[in-house]
Length: 590
Image (cartoon, rainbow, N blue to C red; front, top):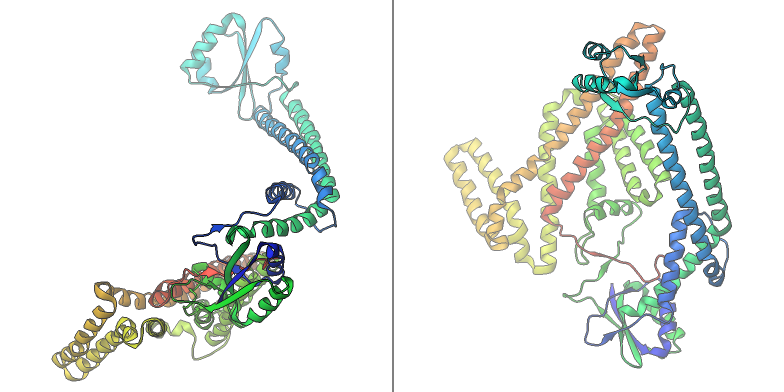
């Protein structure tokens, strides 16, 4: 990246902004100097308010496509469209509330199904009353001191009818037996079974009204949606340009715009601005300094590119920091494949990721990176000779026979992976602080491991004392180097080196779990498949389909989480800081 400063008269401000926007190359820095910052161009506030209104309408209508229209045309009808939409929203909300209320009433009357009386008829008499109850009728009958009542039992609730003259006795008996009374709504007439039918008819009528509201929405969307989309895109550009001076320094007659451009695009931007301003501006270019914080633009090839999404999940690298995306390409798929290690699951996970690319295009880079893990899973499945838990190929690397070897291999991978991170960290230190800092801050960690290994080997061959002497002979100077490079913090973090390496036993754990889970599903289905009956074959096949489908998603989750953790936590911590700013050129999203 190169730092660029464009200085010119205010008469050329609009031409410069238009040209920078059209090129989409310059990432503005917000001006922090002693001069005043610029103010938005004329009518920017009015344009911003209209843009907010248009985006609000678009979010409610969710239109498709574009149709050419003028700002004047859309401005004139925006208020009217907003009013119509608000009215439709109110209608829709009222109808939904009505439907919800009817559903509650339907639920209530279903509990009374079986009660063969019209409660409205009882309500209309002068001598009778009733209650809808959830109670134990036998206890009530023992408690009540009158026979001037009758009980009608429904599916979940009962109706108690009684003469008004014995209301006190009825109330007392209900209190003594702990009866629960339910409120009765008289807005629906007829016996419970008739009331349910009436409610269902009203619900259908309300749902039809809801469809009419939806149709009115669609009519508005079809008529004005494409025009709103067209004007929104144009308005976004207008507003973005109008607010650009907020990042500039301004005097009474001139402006200064500062920012960053890719080094290879310097001539393109320079020539365009000089031409647009009729050579009335001054352009300065300088390299990034130590105190500068340039934006970061990835520059990876097509293979590494998808893994940038995984790097961004943690943090974008700083401008002068090694981009770890290439490391993710090299080892993340291998870790995933080693853990899952089944050609069948490699195929099904690949289908999941391809589906993700289709239905979630905004996350396509992530799913493309994960396709590499599917390929690695298929490759390890062939190495292990496994297909959905079945041992289909006889290879010398069948993991069912190599648990011990996989255990020690996981530790060796941890040693190699962590030390690779230390080597990258040493390179970063060398670039920023020189060779001695690289050796003290990062190389000392590697020497510490060499000392421990050498001491162990000497102890095994020549005894404990020579081994201890050798280990201390290398270890003590190394600790001094480590203290000089990273201070007390480095000494305190020595146990973290061991824990980081041992954490790679996750590879072993998930590998064995994946092997066992697939075999368990097959063992569950095998007796049914072996029965030879039609029901047995159908049941066994169903178990296999459901079981291996669920395991596909479980293994994707475990393979991803454990594999990416070994990079983010166990390796990146030795060399990666992150926190870089994304390269976001003005006009770059047009």
